[in-house]
Image (cartoon, rainbow, N blue to C red; front, side, top):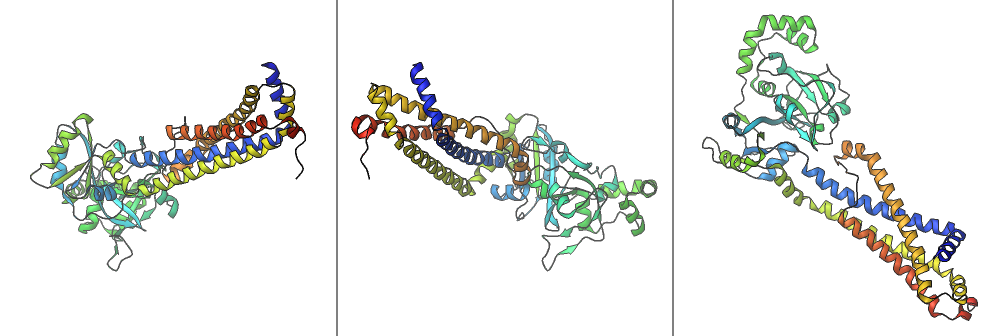
Length: 445
């Protein structure tokens, strides 16, 4: 055994450059194969976890896919809204721990504007991670601080694209923007009080304002403040804010309470006990005051993924082509390398090497080379995923999970090893079948 091991090491060292190329070829093939497979699986997992911690999404009765598209991804617009009374009824249900109203319809430079409440910043999660601020804070509660009506929080992508910082003023546009009927709400500029850290979720492309602020822009409501005082308040000077709070506190709080919207686009609901999600869903959908629909985000997102499954199928096809190409390249390289060992194998036969020993000697060397390539490719893929996980999450919304290969990836690696064995078995069998004279003196071409 030691003799064959020493002989294999000496033989491999004499062909170290060729074997290094074979190992590198296997490693690159494994790197591509594992990377494509893991990105495919993590892309689907990230899509399903785009909205975490929300047990139900409630909206007007209709298409669940449409509700998910405009309430979670801000794609499209609702055909109709739900009544605000439905939101109040949901809040009063004993099983409901929190409820976040969502109002859509306006834009800022092409980015959707979402009217909501400060509760969103406490409970919204994406990829099981809560929202965090890179600058500033969440907007205040307009029911207790009327100046919070003018506050706005920007997603990371919006702030980066337009170079906004805390304290900047901006004006949102009524509707989708850019159309003939689009008008700016320039009578009510908003002040940036916070900028979110990148999450890779649709909220990065969203402008968040108070629900009362959203309603006030559409009611032409100005809190009874003069333009000069409003400008000073938006500038954030302590003197103007103190004067504003002293002179208008009671009137503004009364007016802020009067800014309750009539309708909402959707409501995100969190329960005390997720096991009650089906009973709560039935209760909400049986409301008499408003025909509502309650959707479980995980189930709806999985169904929505079927609509865009062509992307996953494309990645599966790419992975299969990569695996086939890798197997063929490894087989070709090993066959070429083994063809150059014809004399070596003939000499071993002349020295009395048994057929099985010769076959085991060749196969063991090929398996070792293949395993080294697989381990190197696996280590490289994990290092690549680990180093690029922040960039993939922020820029592409894909949360990667480095770890052991999946079942499909493992089967691909086993197939790669099988090809290596077959590629080594053929020349080894030929070496056994050929005569010593043919091996030591091959015919001239």
